[in-house]
View 1 (cartoon, helix red, strand yellow):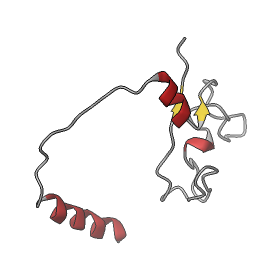
View 2 (view 1 turned 90 degrees about the vertical axis):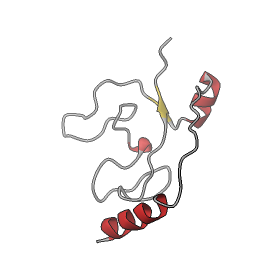
View 3 (view 1 turned 180 degrees about the vertical axis):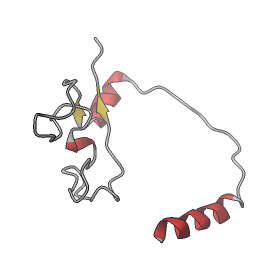
Length: 91
């Protein structure tokens, strides 16, 4: 199984290094919008037939939500899509 092999390879590599520091920051609203692939405007994630609703938290542009489907942003399947940023305008 690939996951097990990758996990043990990561564990071996991680044991060789020590994290010295971590730095967190806040992105500007302009940068968040420029990185975003979709604005979340709909609070209903699925329609009557169970399909993801565009503009919701299940919008396919955020990453492929369904098994066997491909992400419209990067073209990868669900297992290989890293996911993509969306944003919600609060004001």
